[in-house]
Image 1 (tube, rainbow, N blue to C red):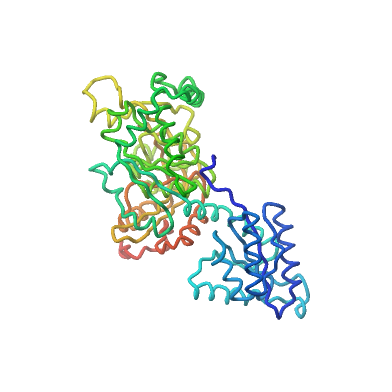
Image 2 (tube, rainbow, N blue to C red):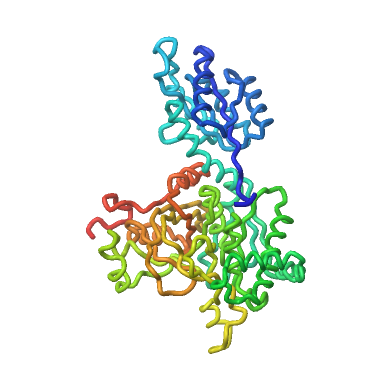
Length: 493
């Protein structure tokens, strides 16, 4: 991944209530640092009062920490410990010490009790703090909480320093991707909206850019002999890749990270001379998502997944059902999935090559060729998609969306891509998610989500759930098991 994904520098600050031994917090903090075994800065200031709090926050800022662990080594001072979250510019996790490393007279810290008052004070002050599902533990327990916190912190830091750059209004027949941008501002994301003409002018300015041959060579190496169907197209696509990368650097402004939401049809291919899908796939592999059809919340969702997974992600249509014949031949009896648990997810060709089967190749967009080029003609400007089956493996299908009323909603569903040839076109795979049929009806349809979903390659539901909660999303849906009905599910079916 490139520098478009934050690097977390974590610090730990121990706090101590002045009627408890301060040494208890210090010893327990040192044990955590030892258990973590590197990768965390140990603040030497143990916070007992507000002045200590200021000293500690200044210390971790000087060390350039961008995320914090506040550790209640004993009961903890309620006001100073919560003010750390106010004074520190970054995500803060609050955890507390379990007993058992000393006697229960002079060695008892009561942090189990102190965590309750800590959470109460955070709420009183409307301060954000990440508290794990069970925040009390030994040094080894807390080291595991810290490991879980790092991808959460990375995503929160990324979102709050993100600018989404768009080109063009949404296509007329794809208003499903339209959403109020109010939700972006609520979670700290900036947006810059441009026209396709702005992008075309910049693209033409990059003609004969001296960097184009090197990008072409990199593309050819990535595609290999069998995937590089149109070598004469590479200079055009390389020119576009450089256009987007330069635009990102020149338009970051006060932000550190970038994602794109671009209009890719119907005018784009004819005016630029190619489909942008392969270039979009390459940027996604660099940690710079480029969503299709100006799907702003799709780009945001992709970026969150890239931060959490520290890996390439993609954006796909929840596209078509799996034919019963294919299910009966390749899936039934091989897995426990029902037909309604399966579906095909597809997009024209924006999935990174590293997440596709070996037979992936640059091809042409069949649907656009039907629409935009003469019937029966050889594909011309509709070339440029990266097509093939997406490789089998675990996935998380998810989305953060602002609904028509301006409310943030989300869903998360873990599943897998099956090792089943699709026999179809585009970048596509056979997906399986437990209880997908019910999830499709009672979440995706019931809550009016669009057809685009982000895909992270692995099971990241736990971290995504915590990130959405930290960002203030109240509605986080998931694929509920059969024994747990949805509120809208008919109990008599």
